[in-house]
Image (cartoon, rainbow, N blue to C red):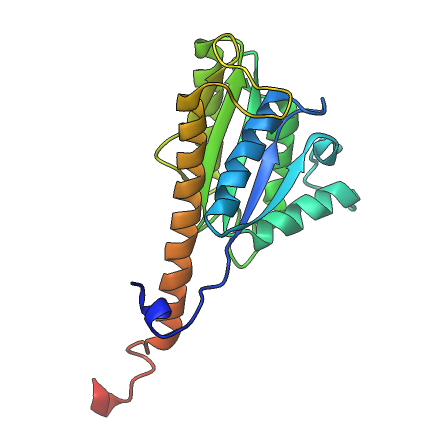
Length: 216
């Protein structure tokens, strides 16, 4: 039993933000993302989905004086997130332009208290009509997450729509894919909880600078 549970303290629920899908409502990538976010909820997380129309934004321009309301909402959500799950369709062997543009907006977090994706696990999911495109897209996504200082989860999920389908309610028909989406969510939530616990310990434990000379 965790120390917090023994003392009757309930850890604060972590916030997981899901980003992705396409501008087509109910896309396969969005369905996969929703499954992963539902798994995060079952593990006690609060979740927020930013998908479809919410990601239709002007191309990111560093010097732009104003940001759209959708861009502001995306930036604010990521800034407050404890973990992220990103799902992209594969377009010509890489992530979609819409998802990449959303990630380009993370430059606005360069001076944040946690710059870019710092200190956060990021689950990566790609969907394509074939294994090669799906694998290359998730690889590109993981590379970008690294560049944004995030921690890609050990498992990235590739979904081949030629062998995997979803029913009308958005449930994936392949049990192995369902298991992998569950595992990605588990990794993201567990990492966020570990970071939360570490921050709490750091707040309670004095540093050497805070200790009086007589105590050192």
